[in-house]
Every structure is written in C-alpha cells, then in structure tokens.
Image 1 (cartoon, rainbow, N blue to C red):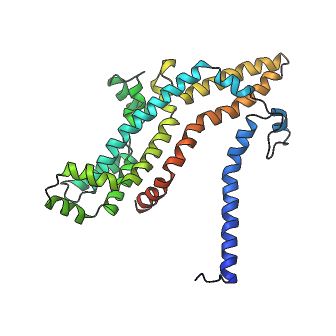
Image 2: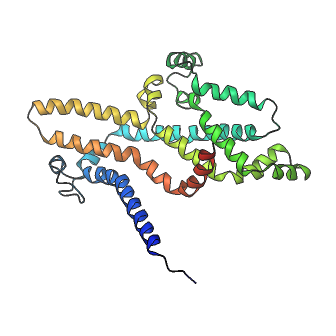
Length: 294
C-alpha cells in the first residue's frame, strides 16, 4: 500500500526537482549553444539572436575543418596515445593499488610514503625533460605515455577501493582452498573491482585525449602530434590568414573562422562524450566508493 505524501514531502520533492533541473540546464546549455553556434550564421551569434534553435544553418566550418588532412593524422595519433597510454596506466595502477591494499605486504608504509612524497615534491620541468632526453624518448610516441604512466592519486583511490570491497576473509578462504596470490588477483579481485577499473579508464583516457603540453615539449615531428596540437595549429594559421583577409576587406573568411572555432570544440570533445555513457553506471559506484573514502 502506497502512503500518501504529506505537504512537506511534496514541497521537498518540488524543491529538489526544481534545483536539479536548473543545474542540468546550467550544465547542458553551454554545450548545446556551442553545437548550435557551430552551424549557425555567425552574425546571429554576434547579435545575440541565437538562443535555442539554429537559424541559417551552414556546414562551412565543419567542411573546412574536416578537409584538413592533418585532422585525421591527429585523430590517429590521439587514439593511439589514449589506447596505449590508458592500457599501461590501468596495468600499473590496478596492480599497485591492489598490492598496497594487502596488509601482509612487507614495507607497505614505506612504499606509501615514497609514493605520496612524489605528490608534493617533484624535480620540475627541466629535470623531467633531461630525463626524457637521456632515455632517448624525445620526438617519440613513448614520450606521451611513459612519463605519466602512473598517477599516485589514482593509486590511492584504487587501494582504498580494494580495502573496502575485498574483505580479508575472502582472501583467507581462497588461500585455504589453495588459491595463489596471482590467481586471486585475476579471478576474484579484478572482477570485484570493475567499477573502479571503469573510473580509471575514464580518468586516464580523458587525460590522454586532452593532453597537449607534453607534445609541445617532447614532439617535433608533425606526423606524431596529437589532435589537440593539430587543432591548435589550424586555429592559429586561420587566425593569421583571417587577419590578412580583414585587412583586405573580406568578411566571409572571418565568418568561416568563427564557425571553425566552435567546430574545433565539438571535434575535440565528441569522443569523450561518446565514451562516457558506456562507463557512467560504473563511474558512479566506483567514484563514490573509491574517491570519497580515499
């Protein structure tokens, strides 16, 4: 039997739904505006007439942007950096987090101290560059992957997740049945840790996809540049030509440039937006259990 809600409960529900709706609009509208502005006449955007629905739809910005062959090279490079980098990140982070969660690890506190120490004290940019150079990774794809192979913060989150969700009794029962440490990790711990694995995939994948600073420092060859650098270069080159066209009295190039600016935001953000829904159900559980308790 369903109990009728009191007036106070109804008022509480209405207030919650109203606040949540406002927050959703505040989050989604900027993204929606960028999408519509990328296919709308820039004059309408400048004048503030674009609010909800695009008018005078044009695809010139996307046509110009996607006609650049370097875009596809950047997509390929970023995809490789993201897939390879995230795979290495997961292997190192999950194994390190699991090992540090074991109370029977000799010297566990010492290892944790050394890891946490690196969160507050680092060598800086120049020593890191010299190290990458001496390792022979300059202008190499590995320069985008190896220097950030492990995040100590993520290791702590994973360690906390294992401590909270893999009881010691389960390990003891498995050991009594003759289960080895490696078998326990692969057959029991990993399946129980799927939520935090999904969170780590999202964290690391977004970081690799949006990475550009390392490419500016370590990569010289245009054929190895990630998408973010390619888009930046396209924007800078078109801004330079746009200034010249403005001096020459041309307005069409200026409009096309504005369309490309919004299009660049969509092109760079689309893969992450596509990935998130598939990991969202794991993300909520893993982030709450791992991050909050960590």
